[in-house]
Image 1 (cartoon, rainbow, N blue to C red):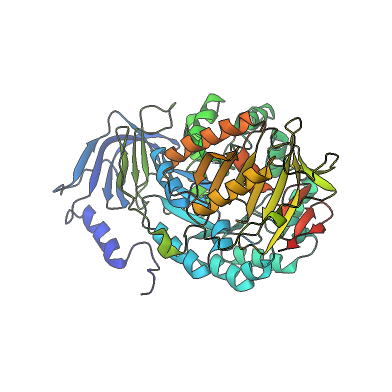
Image 2: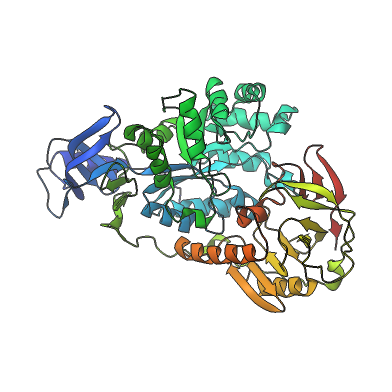
Length: 580
């Protein structure tokens, strides 16, 4: 069956018009609604008619035909459009389905998602089947097209082939190319990457940058080569430089970079008091950072930092929709838009008490309503991790002359190993641990020492990583072994072991990367793991990101990749992986 090309068929559009003629009743009528009107940039009162998943009228009139129409008096509420997360990484232990479900409860009804985990772990046809399934849920899900793996992988040319990139870019649900973590290659003359950017622009889609610490000159060059937006501002000056070069600027507040209060303070100090070029992103925070909400929490912070209410809500809605050319569907409460509407008790509290997503109630008077159907993951190629090989004692040989030292949660530098690493157990007097990354298919491994992760961690194993390869960290080889075997038994996950006993376990049944559990359950499990790792001496902001980024070559200085220990600044392999 050919996939439907248009959101609404001709027959449906005729039906929408017939509601205005009284031949058909609206599904929901929102009476006396005070709502944010982004055309007039003020709060106005109107009656809002909804038919199925679409707003069919906004104005003073009431429908003639209200048979079987749900009528809601909105006198006690303020209505704003559903919020949009323009830069989601929907695989930080949660999965796209559970994240979307959770986000809707906090009023974030549209997410524009990273496709990295799909591109790296699924065939393209399975990825596209998954995108199709995601169209059926209450949240509106859009996607990016990555151009590189963000690390040195062994089969990059197969995964990020021209045919695959073209297939993703042409997909209706894909709104942008990027994020451009591989931009140094672009500046070094990578013409294939430049061709993909040109193709993206030809299709009227956006290019998302990834330019932390970029100079004015680099920002100008990247704008010339096609970048449209960047989310890596860490100071008001960074924001100013991006605005000067014509960028849309994503203001970020994530678990690893909770920057929004600082950014807003410094933006205002610089005299910037216009907000049309700003949007918000949580940039894929780990689950526990979402306890208070998603984009609603960012609006709250903006309001507390003196951003006018209308502007704060616009940064979460219409600004994003206009930028991505989806204004005809999202970002405002206007005739013709998808019925994503948040019901607030006050302007000061952006967390909604009720939420409509695609015209369905997902939250009503503070109570969550379950509308999403259970997902058949296995039919989409997302099965538990099946490891059909054994970890051997030979794999536990650590003899590398230098290790990696953690500067913070995600930055790693090389350092000379001065301790004796020939024994099976390391002392708890220091913060050095055995570290191994091993191919999920058991073909290769790389062994070194990790300094700064923990002082008293006996054994941790994680199948969650940037590439889906398996990470082992610990002081005790026997406990690392036990944790590995337990991780294997549960089909993937994060497992800790101490003295032969399993002490922590988060099963990740979807390819060893994501959990099927609802986000609120995951938050509880994650908080427990964080507390345990803290007791073991982990002193940084986010261990989930530490595990994710050990192999990420878009960060300095040294990374553990599928090809070996990699020097990011000099773009070279220092020690290759050992074939098993």
